Length: 145
Image (cartoon, rainbow, N blue to C red; front, side):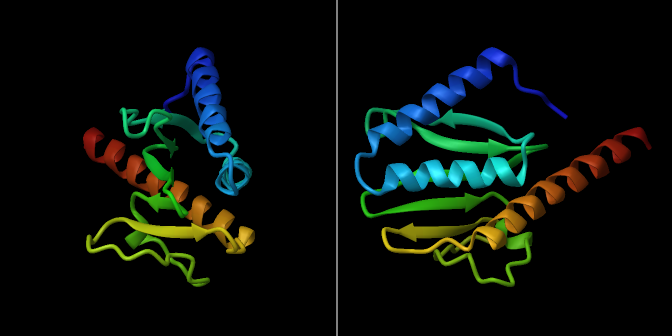
């Protein structure tokens, strides 16, 4: 598994903290809660902040483990968790609620008064990590043959 250097992890943590603090309304604490849930689901997950630009100076939080697992994005009226391979994940609790026209990604929109089914979200994150781990193992096996 690709590991994250201590300096990179520290930078990512500072960037994520800056992102949370930049959201003075309900989105900041909710983004912090999502971070805690993601970390609980997979303590080995790699956290980064990507795609900084003038319109989004604090960037987008990206979480990966053997590939991209999900992003946590903030918008004016909601937060969005986008799962890179969400279409391949079981979702018996119906967490995916955002419209997506593609055949790969799926997302969860979280609005101010929404309650998070934390148990189902932990399961979804773990399933996404397992999917990445299986895909990585298959790629390595194919290279050896």
